[in-house]
Image (cartoon, rainbow, N blue to C red; front, side, top):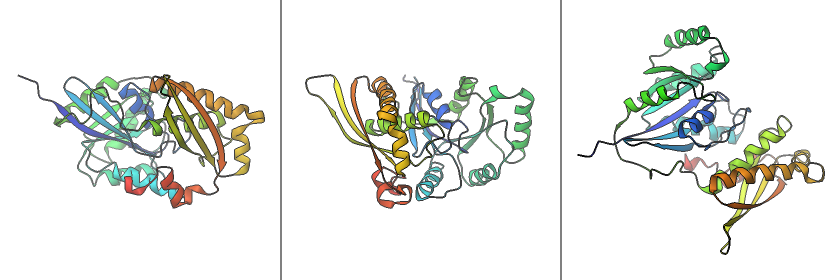
Length: 301
């Protein structure tokens, strides 16, 4: 007799920069979401898929919860809200070295209004003494009745097995939503554009704010070779930013291209010929037209 199969959807939420993308990537075992030490790196809900012999978990990584100042920010906040609906488990990530913030309290109030199983996940436990972790558990227990409270380090893979084991207990009998060899529902174009954006954030560090978008203009596989030609445009909001992204004699843009191509080839499993251009689109984060063009469309939430 065939064993019963279990499945469910898991949302990962929390303030900006608490390690949501790092956690999802660690649980999946592959890099799906881009990672940066800058807040609001993730802009879309990103689904990662973990399939085991008797269960499948579909993870939804969300933008960091924050106060919106632009239309792009509004999109990101709506994306977080929608990720709380119709999921089986919500992982609420916090850091142990912070005091409880107003944003954390706002998240908790939202969580109290939904029927999903809420886990409190204390991430980055490798950065503090154990006593601080216990203090955080006591502080948050008074705020809400969480189903589970689990300390982890996503970066160092500490206690992730225990987290998976506990999540498995809350899954219900259900179908296999995706093929077992599929690890994300994101199209290849979106994955490559996010890789390029991540490399810009890493290389530029604090020189360029988050007014960066990447659009894949074309992506074609050559008939006679195991090679994909990709043309992408990097959009920024100021002429001065364009100069910095290109760099002296094109050195910075070249480095962005090298790093982006290397990681894209690893994920897609084929050689890539990548060409990058840089254009200025002032205030694109407040333009409905460009937000929709870059994939930040409220209709998709």
